[in-house]
Amino acid sequence: MPVFQAFYVSENEDKTFSNQIIERSTDDLPAGDVLIRVKYSSLNYKDALSSIGNRGVTRNYPHTPGIDAAGIVEASDSEAFTVGEQVIVTGFDLGMNTSGGFGEYIRVPAKWVVKLPRGLRLKESMILGTAGLTAALCIDKLIKNGLTPDKGKVIVTGATGGVGTMAVMILVKLGFDVVGVTGKAEGEVFLLGLGAKEVVSREAVNDQSGRPMLKGIYAGCVDTVGGNMLATILKSMQYNGVVSICGLVQSPELPTSVFPFILRGVSMFGIDSSECDIEWRKQMWKNLARKWKPEGMQTITKTVSLKGLPKEIKKILKGGQMGRVVVRL
Image (cartoon, rainbow, N blue to C red; front, side, top):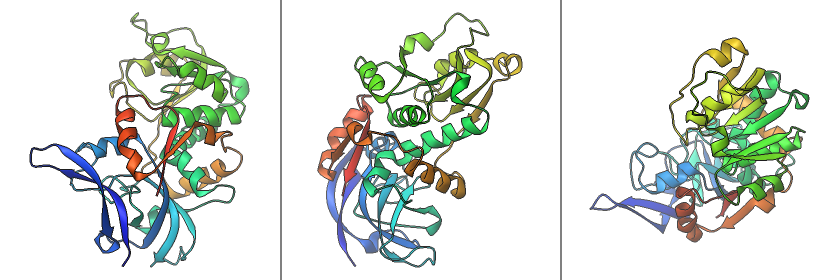
């Protein structure tokens, strides 16, 4: 069976963690229906956590992270996939407790695999990756619950992160007026370059007044941070405003009241891209390949090899990453 290179994270005797690039055999991969030769992966915050030994992400080491992978079917025991097909795998257990996309091969269950839709290249699918899929799911939920461009502004928190960046780009493509939230000095120029109409600081959406309601400003929201920022935005939604939430970078706590929901009819939806329905997942990839495909994706993307991963992992853990990092295998 093929020998391949993989980014490998190991636990040391002193309980610290280190990484190296090693050669592995496909015989070492877990059981699964489809063997995929990985061409591209992408770096997500969850991958960075797995790379430093976070047990909330990865229970057992040594391990190869990478929750995203795009490549070519090498072998298949499933009638749904044939050798040579281009495919995408994101989420489920890939890169968490199953050997992930930071290796040249993965073996996974067929139910995790999506065929690369027409209109999308393998590299483009990894510029999008879990971040793009999550953003698409958030936006789809908002649109299905009444959000249209004429309703008003849509605010995106954590707007320079992976999901936030993709949410801004997709919403702009769909004709929405987007307000991006960032705490980075260089974030304003970055977000305005993506097409955001307005950029506000974290402090501007961190209300400490204790008031249960604020002026209704926003028609929609994609929130990636949680905490008091989300609570502030909920109080600032217009009547029948809609909010999709998918992250907890600031906090998992939500210090709010029922007032936004019962006085303004605000609706809030939780999004989980990891285990979402496969048919919804397929539809979102089709959207991302066609009418929702962000323009200028290459301009916000840095491409690295496995050797370049450690530097980028340190950067994302420090909150210094903007745009997307694609890993070329």
